[in-house]
Image 1 (cartoon, rainbow, N blue to C red):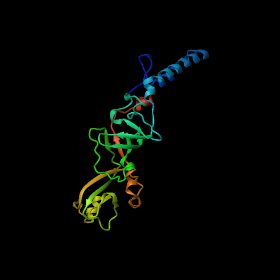
Image 2 (cartoon, helix red, strand yellow):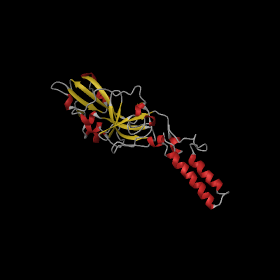
Image 3 (cartoon, rainbow, N blue to C red):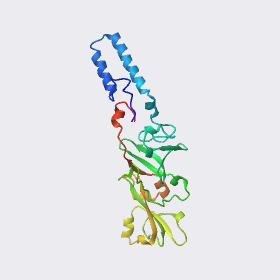
Image 4 (spheres, one colour):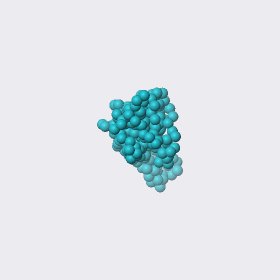
Amino acid sequence: MHTLDSSQFPFFSSSFSNLQNQMILQISFHYNKPQLCIITSILFLVTTVLSSNPKFEACSPRSCGTGPPIKYPFWIPYEQEPFCGYPHFEITCMDKNPILRTSNYEFLVKDIYYSNSSFTVADIDVYEDKCPVPLYNYTFDQTPFTYSSENWNLSFFYNCSTEPIDYPTYEVDCAKNATHFSFADFHKEALEHKNYSLNECQFMVTTPLNINEAVNISSLLRMNYTEILKTGFVLNWTAPHCHYCEKSGGRC
């Protein structure tokens, strides 16, 4: 975290603005109006000098195109200094889009909710591939990220010898052939209740999705599964909080 340099101004603290107001209130009882104006001007200049600290300015919020503001614990290389955030929170601007890279994946950062330490991401393959189907379950081991409990799960079933009958699913045409089927469904338990054996399929992948609670399944089934994947999913992050620092006028 980078705050203003208190070594140069011994009376400065994290609650400098409050201290400044208290000082003005106290000295107003001891000095006449011209003297009070001079002292107030000095305090204003001190605040200005402190806020222009290079490290303070280096960590000011940035953005990639029309994306969300990027600030602590996130940071953008070449636009912000490494001390502005943490390594796992590095954001790359690619074609004016904020991209988060992990060891195995690349995600478009759709939104960031600093108030509750969470953010929405979507796999960039959904936007670029002709057949945007997830082939692996996302894992975030050894990262500060975890799935939000608000996510729904969309399960993809691949290379199935039969397909469900009289049950609404998303057909994945680009991942089927003349003898095997592939499809997606929100409720795999309901499939089993309909006596569909999941053993009919060679493998299954589950993808989390950030679906609004107001949306019902009927409206979802009228959408293309690729459009649903573009809604992305929510991740929570773990990092030291910066609320008190920012509230007092500092910046992490």
